[in-house]
Length: 156
Image (tube, rainbow, N blue to C red; front, side, top):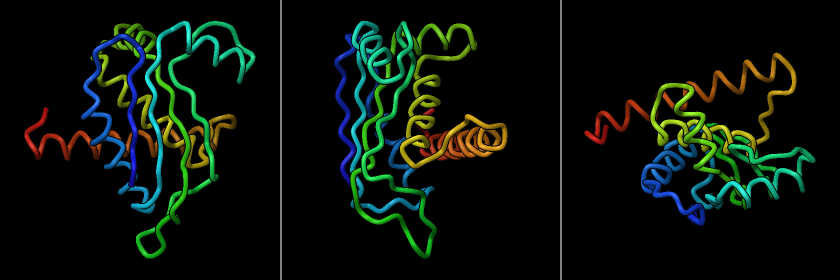
């Protein structure tokens, strides 16, 4: 599995946490070890340009996902086949603002946004109430599982 993380945001982010998180989540979702994805951290100006271009909405947003091979979560018996998951684009400046409002750390917000973006790459959406319940429930489960794994390793 190749997970490429590029930080062009100008904000210092612990990329190793995002790497461990993504590896954890992909394993939990039974995605092939041969699947690839990229995580790009960009500043507000670049994020606003993407937000306008792809969503036709003004202002920077926190996360955008660009799926490629339309892969879906697998099962223990039948993992997701190899392929290109796509790109997750994060804006740490927006994440920091949201973290302050939510009263948690910026890295906690980036963990939430990275997990959210990954679920979008795997076909989850939250346009309808039932979809939202499913996606946000899985998101919460994955983050909780990751945090437990990090505590067991003495990383938090």
